[in-house]
Image 1: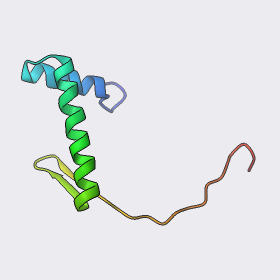
Image 2 (image 1 turned 120 degrees about the vertical axis):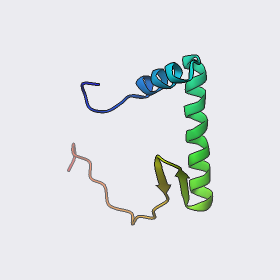
Image 3 (image 1 turned 90 degrees about the vertical axis):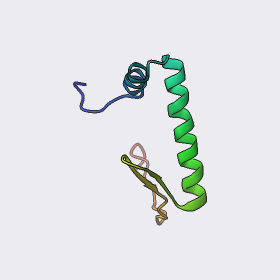
Image 4 (image 1 turned 120 degrees about the horizontal axis):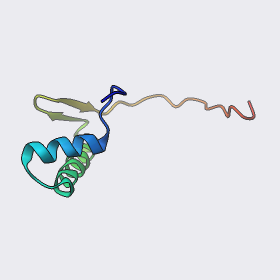
Length: 71
């Protein structure tokens, strides 16, 4: 991990090795966790993964964007 961040592929490989499952199964687990986290965060405003962290829905004020090409 020279760049300092773990990629999705690296995470999938780590989980597959640790759980002695295929990369395809590990990817399915990650995708399922992500979809559950998104669904529950939208529904309840917060999603907690014990021992890892929490996702919290935050309402932010809209901002004006700027196209760098046209100013």
